[in-house]
Length: 339
Image (cartoon, rainbow, N blue to C red; front, side, top):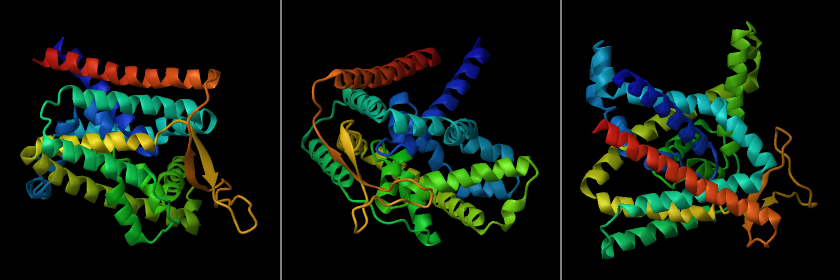
């Protein structure tokens, strides 16, 4: 029975990784929220901060089993397996759904964030002047970021590395959307679409025995960009995890209230009722990127009219809330079994 339960927990951990990976790719949604709500956020941060000098010493000395146990390798491996699979599967489905059912997809995300706020606030009892101030600061920062205008695309490798360090914040800071930060930095399409597609095409070419991509300068450039972005993400993940582990240990209540503020502020980003504003040239024509797609400049938010579409969207908001409550229920059930 124990082994079956362990296998089930492993499967659910991969599924949670799928959820984090998908959330990280959607602008306005934070993978950290998934970790927070699913009940493994602190273990995730703790495991990442174990990637330190001692861990590398074990690795370089050839003590691979000790290294694996020290960094909680099984937990991280299953979680990142889910994230990697997500980038080539779930995220593709999300791209399709957002393109064809944008209102309903954003409604589900909006509901999930509302559910996340309820989840975090439910067990938070330390409200005082300091935590309330921290909450307000988090809300202001979250809202401020959500209404900034995007920059232009920049493939300078140092800037790409910096993008990696910043964008990974969505995995460690619930409510702080790394993909939305990439939009603001102008590199969302470059780093989460074009380069990922280039890697996918390269893997397909290798398995089919076609190595002609080695003489394709554009493909090589994309792979180089993705490699540097990945290095920056790993560096940011480890660095932020050490910082967060420290603040969670010494300033837990203030940190949680700030994170709650981020999540509340992110509601402005995922507000379902918004109109897409496209970039225009001097003649008023919509600008097209290198992939032949229209370039988004920003979103104009509005209050919906009461009609059938709005009622359906509200139903999806409720569905999003129920998804989070179901995750909470599963997390509580799992903890009771473990006890």
